[in-house]
Length: 196
Picture 1 (tube, rainbow, N blue to C red):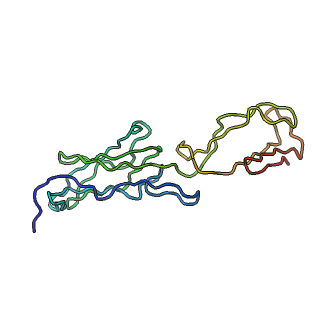
Picture 2 (cartoon, one colour; picture 1 turned 90 degrees about the vertical axis):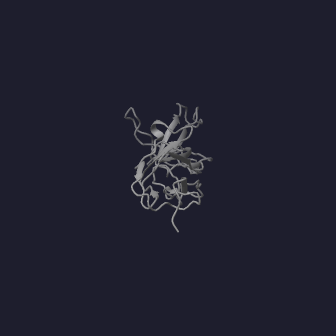
Picture 3 (cartoon, rainbow, N blue to C red; picture 1 turned 90 degrees about the horizontal axis):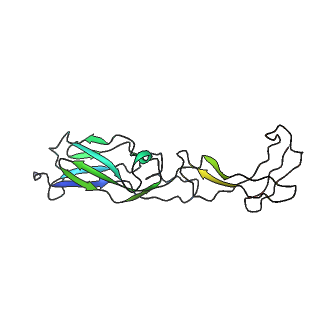
């Protein structure tokens, strides 16, 4: 049975929301800086949603949509692909910025949108100080207390619970040294480090 004339575009696969569960299991569907595990597959279809196999080398483009979809939030990868037997398979799309997005596919005068999906942060890669500790006398708590934020390799805030530990460097910025056995206690961040 032959397919009818081109009637629409139909999304067969698209990125989906997948949350972090533990710091050991990186979500693969839509994680910042990692190609989507569920790369989009879109078909040129007839009125019965059959792929029109006679359509080869028809271009289809994809664009990133969402409140934060511009600038650094660009869709990375090959955004225009040719059809093969009426089906377009994207292979290397990714986004580096956390947010809620959806994809717009355009081909042969038709437009179709994916369902919204969340791009989640990647693995923790660095700590960024938001607030540096102030000077204080011996035995007196820092005022203000230091405040840090975990970041993934692309600058997204990491929201997983991690344990922080403080470390005292033996040599100060002015070249003087911190006495041996000086230590910092931190009951809310998992322990302390001593200078050696």
